[in-house]
Length: 98
Image 1: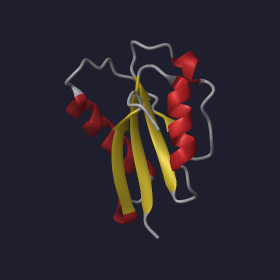
Image 2: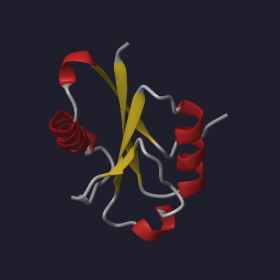
Image 3: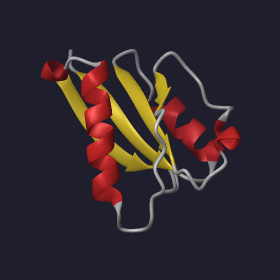
């Protein structure tokens, strides 16, 4: 079975992110989370799990600069996993979750 790597970009709403991870989490996925450097990372301390990884390097992200962050995150995932059987999905944790 293929594995899914979720690249998550967030700057607020830690409870929404926690809920999204809970809804999407399976034994065959991992979440690679980037918290905008302008945000207080301590707000996201409620989020943890064996399949949740926060990026060590945090970037300042301005609206419409998603491409640079996506490239950074994709290279981060490649170093942690075998990309031969990996599906990558990107999303912002700021969208509403039903």
